[in-house]
Image 1 (cartoon, helix red, strand yellow):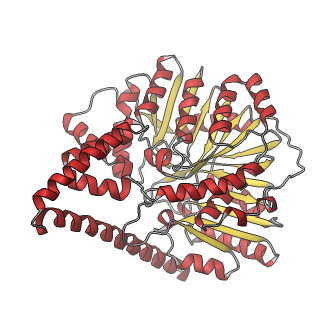
Image 2 (cartoon, rainbow, N blue to C red; image 1 turned 120 degrees about the vertical axis):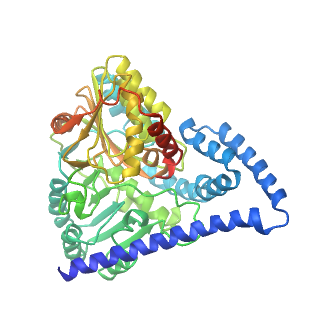
Image 3 (cartoon, rainbow, N blue to C red; image 1 turned 180 degrees about the vertical axis):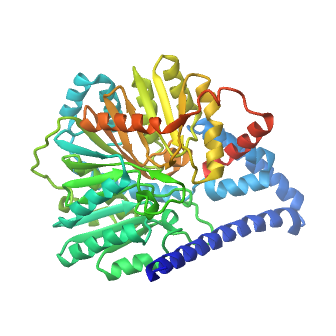
Length: 519
């Protein structure tokens, strides 16, 4: 075994220890509160009743919130059944009290960044005339995510992550001014070493390089020394929301985005992180299925702004210190394609579930078919209703999920949603070669999405995400063809799940659903 592999395993071991230490610290805090409330104090009965009263007020507050019932009901049941435990957990991870400060920080930064994006209302009007269904979704994204729709952008689709990586490496090697890379997970192994070699060369050539990654997403792969190493190489590096022992009200929100921007001219996004398994260098869950896109042209502006938002918010940079004009540039590019491209970002802080609304709108606007591929299927009542209603209207609705799970508990919850979908006409496929991590949808040969947003509570409600809405592009048909091939390699389980499940299985899956928000 090589020394680099040994070093990588050591870092993974250290990251695992840090995660366990943090989890144990939080657990001990909860246990201490429970013990304090029930055993230690001579006023235990009073505290118990006070907690029950607090639970009732929290339940009433939750019930009145403008949130989906799928997110509210698990907390309501937990607090009413086990007041002390439920209140403690809700205050710890459900309330997210510190997000008020974070929200203000993001709003301040967005006020400075978003004006650098073009209005493009004329392009939106053209789109609505040419393709009303897609134009309606683009209008929603323009109004509620504040990211415009573009033309003059070429899109290349990659049906395998390794194809995206190879293209990315070639573009990175040509960088002249700056490189921005934001990923949920980075593993300091073979795939990353290929990237780092190019980045080191570009740094020596005077290129500004910034790396931004999520601590939770990377905790199994690297420790905090990784950021220190990158900085020693001249690479600017920030870590989103580092996991530290103790209470962390912002712990439930992670950066799940995958973005690469090169010189403000070329951008990449998709489902894959920068770790070996995504490129089938290692095979922990059979073959890994992931996808991505490359953009060149006007739409790269939105990808640049999305990166700068997270980078500056995480660094607690004041808006007056921003210099967007240095990076959000006009690129005199003449695209070969004429389709519509709309990169967008989704934040858990603004109360607008952009990712979910796009998926729901795809199902609502589809007339012939609407297909999805996702690694996890843990959806709200609203999403379930949209999918089943589309199927009832005669739309061919299909969902592809993994044949081999990466998390068995989450896989069980995923399968618990099959029955309610298939009994109303939705078709379900499980990709037998392994784990499909791609997050895409396509409808009517007209519109598609590709990005980081899973069909699960975490992506739709808790994480910082990004995606790209495509209409009348070559990539739309390429995504359709890829999903046809993928379904050809899958087993259809629609008929299998039309029958009701056993009472014991239903009960177990319902209990797991109570904690689905935390999975």
